[in-house]
Length: 407
Image (tube, rainbow, N blue to C red; front, side):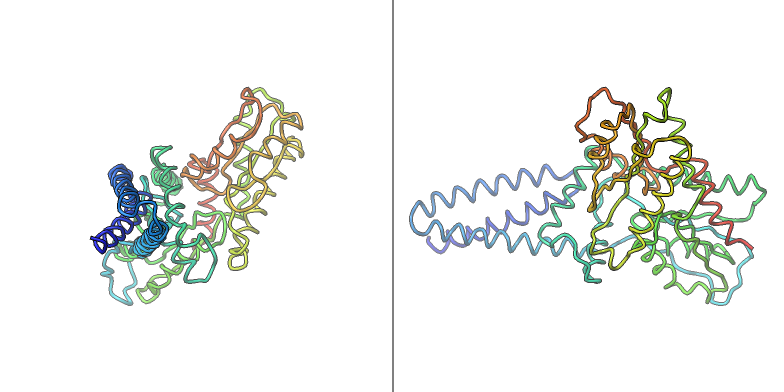
C-alpha cells in the first residue's frame, strides 16, 4: 500500500501538469473540459496528500515529489506543444523549369496574417524562430501563459477581422488596377501566419503562367516578419522557372500612407478645435534584445510616426498634444500620454494602431485596452481610429510601391 500511494501521487501530479498546460492552450471549445478535469485531478491529489500522508514527516516529502512530477509533466507537454508542425498546405509546383510563362504579371499581396479564431501556430513559429536565432524571449515554462493571454483576447473580441479586412483591401487594390485599364495582372493573397503562405501564393502564380512576380509587402517596417516571408519565397528559385521576382519593401517611407493619418483624423474631430485634440500614434514595439538583430523594426517605426506627427503639426494641431506610445516592450505606454493630453487641455483624443495594417487582436483589443486605462474623465471622448484598413490612401500607397516595379 505504501508503494501504491507514491505511484498514485506521481500519476495524479503528472496528470495535473498535463491537464493544466492543455487547459491554458487548447481551443476555447474544449477548454472547459480540461478545466473540469484539472479541478478533479487537483482535488484527488489534495485528498491523497491529506489522507495518504497525513500530517507526519512524509507530507513535506510528498508535496515536493508531487511538485516535481507536476513540473516535469508540464514541461514535457509544453515542449511537445511548441514542437507542433505548421501544417499549412503548399501546392505542387507543376510548371517546368525554364518555361517563360505567358507574359502577365502576378502581384502577391503579402502581409502578417492572423487566424480568424484562436490558433497559436503563429506564435509557436515565432518562439521557435527566436530560439534558433538565440534571441531571448518568454522562458519556455511561461509560454503557455503567454498563449493563454492570446486566447483570452480572442474570447473578448469574438474573432479577428484581419483576414476579412485584407481580403477587402486586396479587392480594392485589384479594382484600382482595373480602373486604369490593366486587365492582365493577377492578384494573390498571402500571409505569414495564416493561409495561404507566401510561398504557396508564389507557386500558384507560377502555375498560372506568371512571367513577372511582384511581392507587395504590406508591412510597416523591415523586420524578422518580412525576412521570413522573403526567405520562404526565395527558396523557390523563381528565376529557374522563367519568371522574374521583385519585392516592393514595406511602407515605412510612404508619404501617401503618412498623409492618411491626418486625413482620417480631420474626418473624425467633429466640432472640436484642432488646438484641443490629442493625437496618439501607438506603435507595436519589440524587446531591446531584438533591436540588436533587427534594428530597422524600431528605427523605421519611430521615424515613420515622427514624420506623421510633423504632418499633424503642419496641419494646425498643437505639438504638446501630439505623441507616440508603444503597445509592448517599450515606453511610454498609451495611458500616460492620454493623461498628459488632458493636462495640456485636450478635449478629445484620437488614437491609431499606427503600425497595424488591418484590424487584428492588437488593434481590436490590446491597444484600446491600454489606452482606456488612462485615469481621465469618462466624459472625455477617446476615439479609436484603428489600423490602416481599406482606406483609399492606404490602397494608393500600396499601389505606388507596386507600380515602381512595373516595366
